[in-house]
Image (tube, rainbow, N blue to C red; front, top):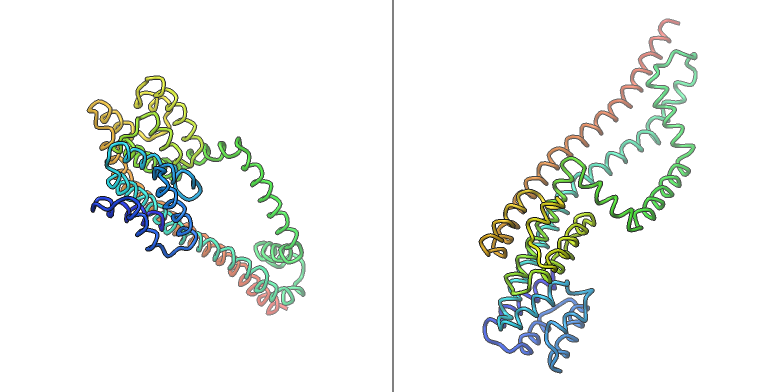
Length: 343
């Protein structure tokens, strides 16, 4: 967010006619985040020594996204640095907004899952044991099977809880190690794309990032092969990223963009339609920007759809499990009372 604000402010100041070093000095003074302020001071010092802003930004790749030096260099080349930085700030703001939407949408289902697990553990660890002493005197075979199963599960969790936790941690670490390998990461990303609802959502999210980045770079005057290589860095899914890498190599050799993308099927059909139209009309940059806007609306609707499905599933599952535990205890109590009355 701080970096986005810096580029937006620089774009406004440069378009207002201020020299670059003066605009940078004002931007540095307005930054309240100490680490970023120190890095920007280094950038300002490099610019005052005669280094281009794009080169100064490139010396801090961990802070500034790879698109920043490229778009800045394009703005320096065509004499429209202010416009290039304003366009970069808008693109970064859109990416930040998308991340906020995804984080906000997934927070509620995750909280529900944590609550569900906590409630079930609370029932098994503290509630069910309160009735074990009561049922201990019941004759064999008189308690319902569901009651015996719940009490057995409670006893197993209490006696082997630490072992279960250790096993889960070990499995998690093993899975993390496997997925840390390149092959494991590619497999996971490819598998995610095949999951119903989730796969389409992931593909659209990646396409929005790619389309907006590529469109902004092309509009900024970056050649298509270089723009493809840079925009590809914004794609986190490795399966899609690999397909885009193959397309980038084809474009470098003089090939088109839409045809190799269609062959690899890494982007949704809507994206291919927009890209094909942009190529045919020599309006690829504007069409990619339009594609990002359209797909962003689709992503919002897909997120709402996923949340609309996930929330009641978690709530109903939690209610069903708790109800099953309570029902097993109540049935045992009723059976135990009937047995006492019969005696």
